[in-house]
Length: 154
Ligand SMILES: [Cu+2]
Image (cartoon, rainbow, N blue to C red; front, side, top):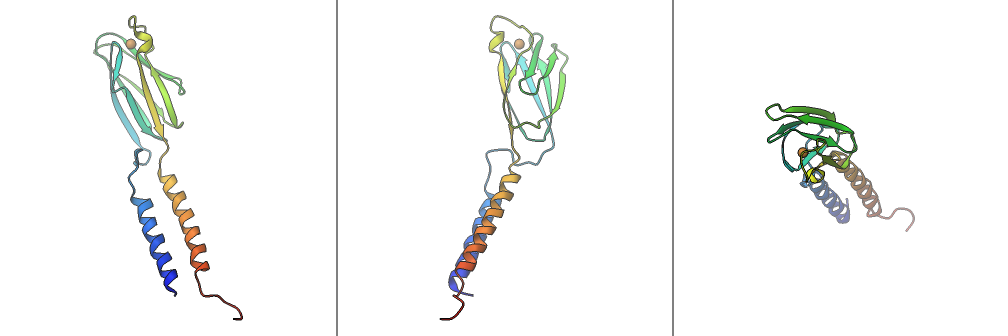
């Protein structure tokens, strides 16, 4: 085994470790159950952003604090309405990645149109790690073969 081949093996190995362990901005958890409590009052949701991984079974528990509010999820066409003192649940599968508006669906005052939030559904990044490892393995194999001793008549 040539020195160059050893160097290539070490480099590919280290890069593989980086690909597997690098922290991700998106939730790394595989798809599963996700329950988020969202409090609603004039004219905001708290939290205003709901995050999920693609494939999650998301349950939003909507709690109205001052008066009746709704929560409509753009793109998923789902709605839940909560009356003060009676939290309401909305469960859906986050099967579409992207950013979707949450809108209050009950007129709750003059600023009601501005009562907004966001649902962010991020692709499960296990897929990207696997793809990166595949590319890395293929590149490493090619480099390894190219770095070998020349064969054939000298
Ligand atoms: Cu409202």
